[in-house]
Length: 291
Image (tube, rainbow, N blue to C red):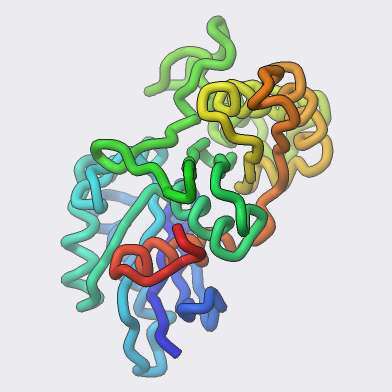
């Protein structure tokens, strides 16, 4: 059975794994991504965790990567908003050199969209939104059974939709965008405590903000499912999802959007690596649930 080297790069951790072409994670390892001295030190962490999982000598058919954005198409240059030391960092070229593998890179939320449509909560659904609500907030959109890319591969950046025009001003963000209202970074900045310790009222407020954005996207794009992952959303649990669904119901009232559901991602903690593997497989032309 063929295998993929899968790498997920986020604002707090880097995870690598070996994933089969059927979506089974064979091996995984992680390191923190916080507070690197410079771009090269952070890449050294990526290289080390990738090497850690490639231990048995069996070859991989590709390397697939999910990384925070924005980026240039294919990850030829990445500038994740939550990774300050990488600005126009040539991630694809460096990983090709490091691993010796054909490497394909996409936004981590688009990778999640592939994963959930391949093996998760959106199997068999041709129109849906996938979201990551974590250190940052990202999205991936599937319409007509096709993952939307956009001119540079950055389609789906729902984190930069304004949900509170007079809301919080997170550095580097327009005031009141969803990422400035609902991300773990924004919650910590507003409350002065980690998002995991947020009180119930804050969890409801964040869910409502996410639901507002989802309802607006449902109105705009004629879809009826949003699949949400990430440490904030999944960590906040039922309180978050009840508030989000109530706001979706309030906002999405058109004939084509009424009844839109917002649900937890089915793949849980496996989603980022399965998604990264799907990016690699899609890049070399292999099927990942028809997407």
